[in-house]
Image 1 (tube, helix red, strand yellow):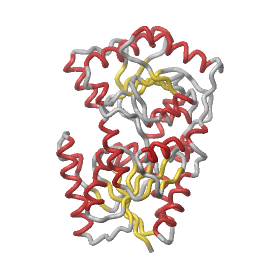
Image 2: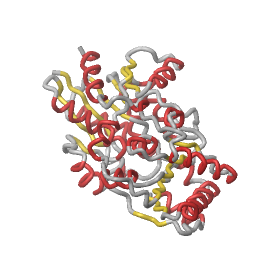
Image 3: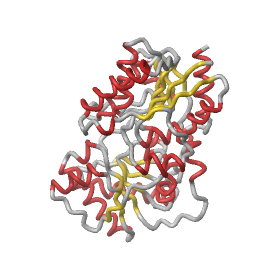
Image 4: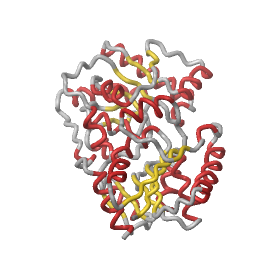
Length: 357
């Protein structure tokens, strides 16, 4: 029997990994150890969130989120805590599996240096924008990994360009099989617009946040429905410090997963800088306006699922609304084939077992 240790720490990663967790637990040839780094650890995650996604209790929970808000606090703690966990508990993993691009995946570096076998799900994503902290994280993890699971052929090519050519498997996007059970099948109400802003490239810059809020208020005027902004603590804190007023935009609490998917399903479109929010809304037939300069999900743009908005150029606002009109009128068709067939968890586990033989 082979021991697979999965290491996750933030809400989007638990969403993406939830189906893989179950497949690993069900496989009689695998001893699955689930480690929660505690990077995000609150009631929404540990209570309702885990129950909703049917994620079992982790074998071990670390305290990354209690180490302060700086990256060096979290990375220093993670490097030591994961090594000590493995050694003190005598875990002996045959492979340690990460997903995504949060600070958690940077633990791949000390683990690789200590001789452990590392795997990365969501490998190969690139925005080619080094201002993005996630870009640094995922690149480090890719170059420390022995086996890579990519969502799309394009990501495989990106890895090849970085001389990562062995043990790279195209498996599709984990989000498809996770999302499907939660998507409503009733008529879309189109009664609100969700605003989801939490990336440092936006909330750390006053002028960008001012422009995003201006755009949101213009959307209220144009479409005659409310814009509701998810209350991410760092975003709202910075807005208060900048003296930015919401105008007619309403602030709402973060949502459990089913509520979140139901909400975006009933939006005519959403405004979001989230990477994951270029995927889940596509599953709900809801287009996304992305106020970012670059994206690590170019397939979403090419497939008419999202529109990259130059938020610093208000002359582009009208172009975004024209794009939304073309989506609504079916002049442009949203295509979700780029997300894969919905069998990612099976492919990951089968390729992982072949790798470990």
